[in-house]
Length: 345
Image (cartoon, rainbow, N blue to C red; front, side, top):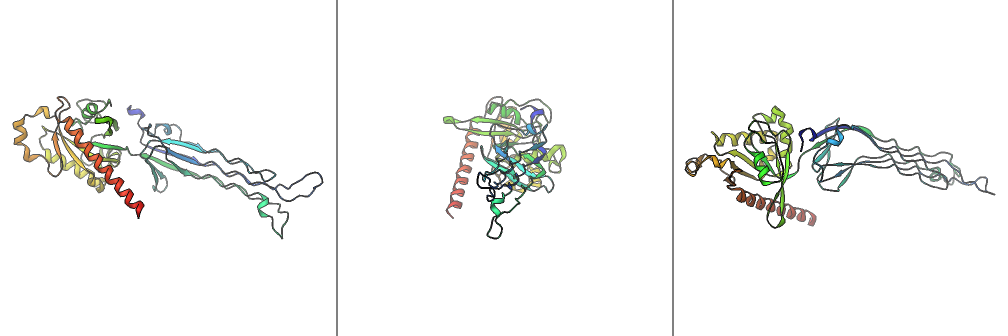
């Protein structure tokens, strides 16, 4: 995913279609010079709809098109014919897109499933024709409703990357290299901080045709939760990853210090992130021998599964895939069980 093409936050102006006016028509025919009201209703104005598309990974399409307008409904006509409905505008967005009211910041909804459609801006209702207003005391109403005006407002679309596993670590700890080994993704890899400045996503192929999505989140630095180093942009992508894979170099001077820094930044940004399942991968295992691993055993952060891996030699890679897949399946089964329980209530 090219850096310039990854857009995860846009502010756009949307206007739904106005409803068409109702008709004030009266029936006329040979021998019937003064027929009753037969004005049709106006057509509904077009909605603006967001539709989830799993083949999209960016909001780039809205970067250069910030004003979008739907069609208005047409006027009602004679013989109680309704006007045509204004065409809806359907905007395809990546899964994990949140729609917000730009003025209040309120989250309106999130698109998480492929093909799901949600109305973001409602089209105006068509006006009623004069035939609706006929009564015993008013046989010839010479009025009809105007169409309801469309809605014009600014909205924010914010993308939070959806993946089964999110790689979490300080800059330059081998996350991108690991992603390139486990998946077909080709992130930029170099020996300097902030090589990754946008999320990279790849599919990890597992046994029997199974797979799961993995996202390389740009490196977290101290005080990222305060926005330092574009921290807010980076951290929000972690919220939509089911399992967090912490990456710390096996040859780091302070293993526990790095782990505490990562936990602190996640907690300060959103305490709920600490409720997600975690795995610790001690990367660059080829840089330490078995004797050093044993000597540093007490330094390895406790309370979560951990293993040494090397993207160079392949050490621990198979075991890591097994562990992650097992955790993903357990989470999916727990989620399905919760959904069934809620449906039975």
